[in-house]
Image 1 (cartoon, one colour):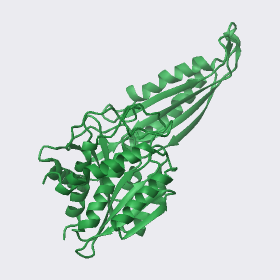
Image 2 (tube, helix red, strand yellow):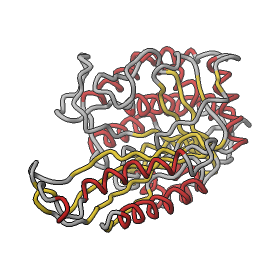
Image 3 (cartoon, one colour):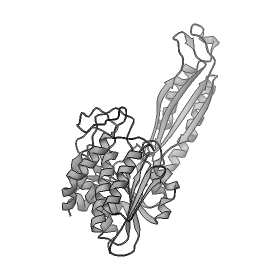
Image 4 (cartoon, helix red, strand yellow):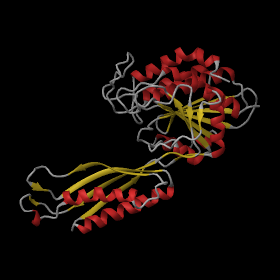
Length: 387
């Protein structure tokens, strides 16, 4: 079963929605205009229920099949943009300085809206589809906010599925894997406390700059010498701040960074060892260290049966050779993980063709991918909820 004819016919209309959203990006939970646009479309399609304000600004709509009662499956799209100044040069480029849809959430939203319109027209299934439009994926944990508002239980959603575009993956292709598909993302802030002095008299100091330099190097030993090389771990120190003059050794230096892992046991080990290594390295130099370690999004974990099912559906849309079931996991993070912790489901990647990378100021979603995404959602619904 290739791209659905109706989905292909909808491409121009859905691309118009997508470009409208692209011109008017909003970030984190401040997606009021976007959410209103989505809710208005869902009401115009004749969805049975449209609820707004879930997880502050999320939207959920229910579409009931015409073949009787049955389970409810949930499909999720994210709505928020990034704090980036766009350089794509497209006619529909962002009109809001400092904000841009540089991750394709406009495309995700448009594809799910297109699927919702299709499903509301045909209703060729038994049970119900919940279409979920989420704020604040980019660092705000909007998925967790929606989950904590109780929508999964309220609408008796039994399975959840998500999708993300993938630049470089050819149009019509999909990629997925069982188990850990995206990493847990934690952050840390380290303050090295020393004693300042004149730069010409370092013996009178406890140099936090030197200590911080040793800390940066020592942290890499957690990855290179203390972790099984088959258990993915990334420890990145991304910022160092200390001192104001080139002839003064400061009292303190601050470090900040991130830890990425694919396994819960690796995550626990990395947090424990980071704290130990920092404290021991500081002590070895006569300094002390204060550490703030924050756990962020958990591992995005695809459930086995649902992954096989999603891959089979993608194969119907793209063809027998269109699905990579052995994709390498991404070390980026995704808050759809919170929904997958509560319900079985799967997260799949859809080809976006030859575009700029995600989070690049020149990125723009490829509208040629829209019919594939719409077809995937529709086929997923009609297959999962077949009479």
